[in-house]
Image (cartoon, rainbow over all chains, first blue to last red; front, top):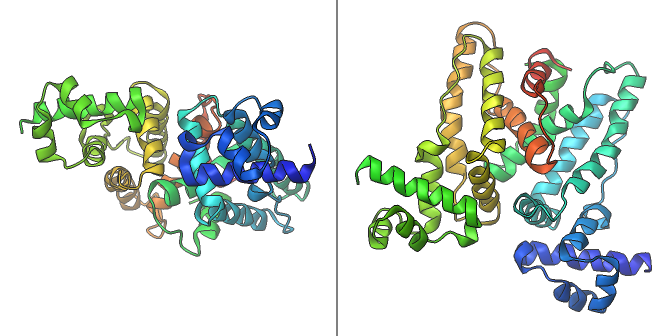
Length: 179
Length: 179
């Protein structure tokens, strides 16, 4: 399938899940919106769970560029800012909250791929920091990512609170400097 | 209403949401399971969202005792262990994941009350630590809670990974000692 067509299908998938939730997402609806035959979609992705799983990882709508600011502190602040934008600014926020919320209840929708894919790219931040002598090689990068990204989920999605402008800086400082 | 009867209604509410999800939860179902008339339930809670919101905060099933181990480190490790148990051990895990997952998609189900109630009780940990001279009064307790509890959500619910035995100790050490 042409990459552009594939992106249109992913785009339709993510926008539909944001509008109608996972229960309202259907391959038929994606076919209609993207102008692609239903059987073509099924040939590539055997179920709506597989389609949404692929869209979460491969769609440009949720694109992720690993920050590279020159310092561990700068990279981690940019990482937290990226998660904040993803979870609070449309269309990403509606998509992420609907799709990742659904993944909690529908194990067949494999959100682990989404998080594993991001983490594979986030690792670079820590490799560079170790190379620059900013970080001990013994620090577990996944723990750092989970503390920071988790804090954004808690504050914005679960508590429903607005994040202060200083949130990213403060969260990163708590980790880098200790409390 | 007698407190015991109220706990039975909350118990039925939380078990039903764990079994059937928020969409499958009905006041009729709760009435049937708890042996209480539907109109009685509606007299106390005007909707299923209100009923579930109250159950999340007031049910003994999700009971929360503020840790008091004598040190900030010990209290925070106990706090993380408590969130780990809540999110990974039945029946709490099925309830918490179903109900809090639903809250993300259904703003009328006010999960903020659940998190606000917990936080009001978690504050004591930080007040005692400041009193003992273990923690600067300038540290934001909610940031600490969000970093730690968020990490458990990320690792166990979103990544679907088992938490190492050292997870709580490592997460707290990252914050107290810096990375």
